[in-house]
Image (tube, rainbow, N blue to C red; front, side, top):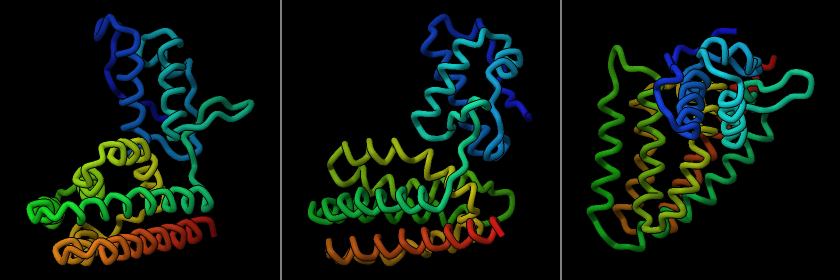
Length: 230
C-alpha cells in the first residue's frame, strides 16, 4: 500500500484529539488526491509504523473518516478506502438537490444584489484557473466553492453545515468517476444559468437551474461509472 507522507511525529502535539484530527486530515488528503485508491486497505499497524505512533490514534482517525464516509470497515479486511456505487451517487445527489435548492431560494428571497456579485466572483475564479499547471484539485475546490457559497449566502448557517458534512464525499465521488475532466472553463460555464436566474431575482427559476445542473452532473458521473465498470 502506498502510504501518505504527513511527517507526523509524537512531538507535533500533546493533545490526543489534535493528533487524531491531523492524521485524519493527512489520510483524507491522500484519499482525495488519489494516492490511496478505492478499495485499498488501510492497515492500522502499517500506518502507525510509518508515523512512528501507537495504533490507537490511527484507529480513531480511521473511525473519524468512516463517519465522514471516506473509508469503510470490511469484515476480515479492516478499514478500506470507500468505493462509491451508483446507488450511493444517486442518494448523494438527491441530498444535494434538497440542500442547495433550499439554499438558493432563500438567497434569492433576500433581494440583495451584492450576493449575485459574490457568486460571479467565485465563477470568475473558476474561469481564471484555466491554463497549464492547474491541478484538478484546485478547480474541483473552486467548483464546490460556488455551491458552498450558495449555502453560506442563504442566511441559514445550518445549510452550510450540512454541505460541509458531505463535501468530502462529493469530492470522493468526483474523483472516482472523473466528472471534472472537462476543465475549469466548461465547468464554470455550466453554472451560468444558475447565476442568471439569481440576477433575475427568480427563486423558482434559480432552483430549477440548479436542479438541472446537479442532475446533469449526476447523469455524467453515472455514465462514467458504468464505462469504468465495463
